[in-house]
Length: 127
Image 1 (tube, rainbow, N blue to C red):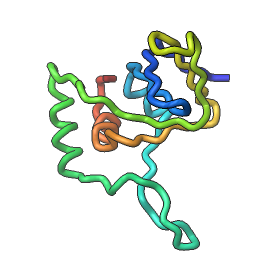
Image 2 (cartoon, helix red, strand yellow; image 1 turned 30 degrees about the horizontal axis):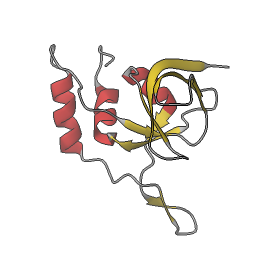
Image 3 (cartoon, rainbow, N blue to C red; image 1 turned 180 degrees about the vertical axis):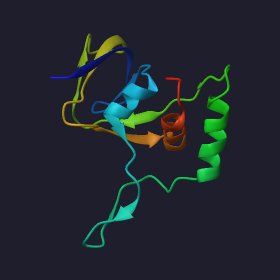
Image 4 (cartoon, rainbow, N blue to C red; image 1 turned 30 degrees about the vertical axis):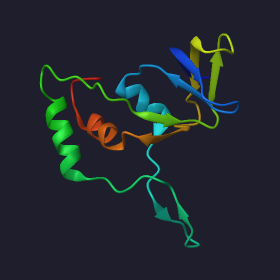
């Protein structure tokens, strides 16, 4: 079993939803998250929720990220419905997140799709 482990901070926003904040390298993020683009399936049903990529915006982000002193201060938000384990106290505060990547990316990018696409195009750096 392949597990990626991260120290995290847990914030309970409701009885059924937990927000976890942690830092992961871009190369790791691409192992556990995918972008689910809006499209129609074979039956014509709408699925997915991310709008089409904006090539010019992605290019601007990539050009910036390729600079020697570039930083990426904005988060990429990923939603999980399975494939993760949270260890630690059930209350808010420090915890550990374990992400099982054996079955491919189980997280869905809900914010930051342009940043993630730009990150995937930057060579020689792993933000």
